[in-house]
Length: 382
Length: 249
Image 1 (cartoon, rainbow over the protein chains, first blue to last red):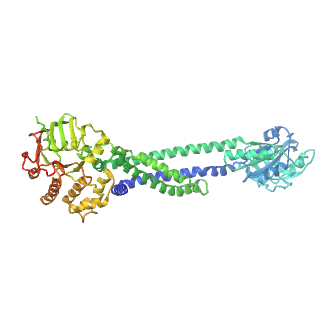
Image 2: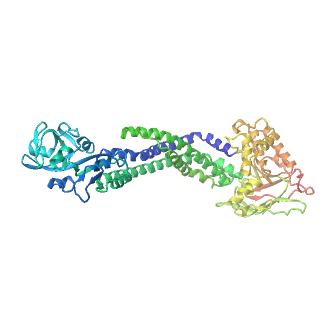
Image 3: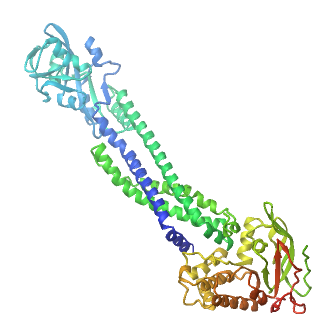
C-alpha cells in the first residue's frame, strides 16, 4: 500500500514534482561536473605545472650552485655525471631532467657565465625561455653553436650568425651564435652551450654542477620522488624548488575552496527551489494529510510517505545529474584544459547521497504538514 | 442547562459525554454538554448551523480536543489523550463519514478502503473488495473517485469508515451532497449497519433521518436543547425511531 500511495502522490503532483526534479537534476549535474573536475584536476594541474619547468634540483651537498652565485664566482663543488644515469634509473615515472655545468669564461675581454646543458631538454624544462632572435640550438652534442642570453648579447653587441670566442685555461672554442633567448631570469646573462663543451671549458670531464628535474604529480608525489632520488643518490642533495611546489599546492588549495564554495552555493539555490516547490505542494496536500490523520494515520507514517517521495526524487536527480555532469565536465575540460576529463565513478554515490539530503531538507514544508491538526484541515481552517 | 441522564443498568454505554465544553477564542462552540449513547444506538444529531454539531462530532472523533469536560468513548476519555494516543484512538475506535466524502482522488475505490486498513494496521485487498461488493460497488473497484457518482463515492466512504470495525461511526451530514436516489441508497446502508448493531452518531438537517434514528439529540447555541435519554427496549424514544437491536452486545 505504501508503494501505491507513493506512486499515487507522485502521479497526482507530477507537474510540481517535475519542477523539483529539474531543479535537483540541474544542481546535481553542476555538482557532479565540479566534483569530477575537482577529482581529475590534480592530474591536470600536475600536467599544467609540468610546463612550468623543474620542481626538483639535484646538487652537491652543501653546495650553492644557483646561477646567481655562479655569476659572481666559479663553482667549487661538482657532482659526478653518473648521477644523471642514477636519477634516470631511479624508477620515477614521467621524470624529465636536464644537467647543468656552470663555467666562468672570458669573452671579448670580460667574464661570462657559460651554462653547459642538454639544450633540447633544458628548453623543455624552461618554458619561460623565449627566442628573441635566430633559432633554437637543440642538438645535445653540437659543440659548434651556442645561445646567448638577451643581456649578454646586448652587452657584447652580438647577433645570431655572429661568432663568439670563449676562453678558459682549458679550451678556447669559437662558436656560432644560433639565437638570442630571453628568460626573464639568470639565463639572460649567460651563454648556453652543450654540456660536453662546458666540461671541456672547465677541464672537468664527467662533472656537472646540478641536475634540474621535473617530477609530475601532486606535492605529495613530488615529495615521494624527492625521497626516492635522495635514497638513490647518497652523494648528492635533492631539494624541491619551493616556488613551484608551493604554487602548485596553492592553486590546488584555491581550486578546492572555489569548488567547495560553488558546490555550497549551488546546493543552497537548489534547496531554495525545492523548498518553494514543496511549500506549494504542502498547501495542495493539506486535505490528503488531514484525511490520513483523521483516519488514524500516525505522523511518522504520513511523513515517511513524503520523505520517501523526496528521497526518490533526490536519488533520481542524483543519477541523472551525474550522467549530465560527466558530459558537462568533459565539455568544460575540453575548453579549459584542452583534454578529456575522465568520469569518476566514486562521484556517483556521493552525488546521489548529497541530492537525497538536499531533497529531504527541501521537503521540510511537507514534514511540517504531519503536525497540523486534522480537524482544522477538514474544516478548511488550515 | 442540559442534563445528563445515567444509563440504565442493562444498557452498555458506549459514549459518555460529561459537561463538555469547547471554545474557539471567544466563541463557545459547546457549553456543558452531557449525554450518553448506548452501544448499538443510532443517534441523529440535529440543530441549526453553528449550533456545535460538527464540533461535537470532531471532539468525539478525536479530531479536536475539548476545552473542558469529558468525552468517554468505549472506556477512553478523549479529553485526556495526547496526540499519539488520539491517532491510535481514531484508527481503532472511530469510523468517519464526511459530507464531502473526502476520498483520496488519486486512489481507486478499493485503494481508498485499503488506505484506512493500511493506516490502521495492514492493507487487505480481498477484504476491501468484499466490503465494497457488499454495498454494490463490485464493478467499480478500480474506479477513481472522479469516475464515481456522489452516491457511489459516499458508499466507498462508508465502507472505508467500517473496514476496521470501529466502535463508533461518526457521520457528518453523509447525505448532504446526495440526490434523493443516492440518499436512499446510503441511508439503507446505514439502516443495515444499525441493524447489525453498529453505533452511529449522525449529524443531519434531514428530518427523515431523525425519524430513522433511535434518538435525536438537538443542539442549539452549543447546548443540548432537550434532555438526552438513552434508548432502551423498555424506555420510550425521544423521536419515532427503532430501538438498537444489539444494545446489550
